[in-house]
Image (tube, rainbow, N blue to C red; front, side):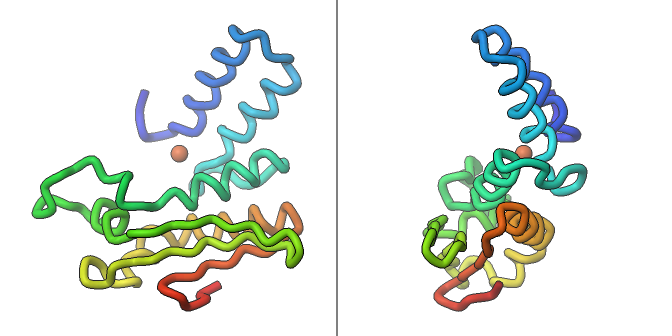
Length: 146
Ligand SMILES: [Fe+2]
């Protein structure tokens, strides 16, 4: 429909698809609420499922996401995503923490550029982890930053 308010339109679309598939209304609403609260500008973790969705969604940064093949026309989102050559989301159940481990090619993009577009998403991940009573750690190029 549109990038603007995509969390809310996505929630309504998902609700109707899941309804057509015969999912129980209680489960449908829980998924709709999670999708509707995954955007850092309008939502926050409101349930375990929404917190998990936020952690997964905000960790989705990688070269494979870039569809533009012309490097000279890259915007900052393309450049940051393209510079991320490895992204692992690891769960340490013993230490009760989730670790986003990124490898950024700093020849393509300084680490600061990552934070220019991912600071709000990083903080949202931190609060989503807090909702789940676990820690969120961010490691970039071997350095623990959070
Ligand atoms: Fe989204």
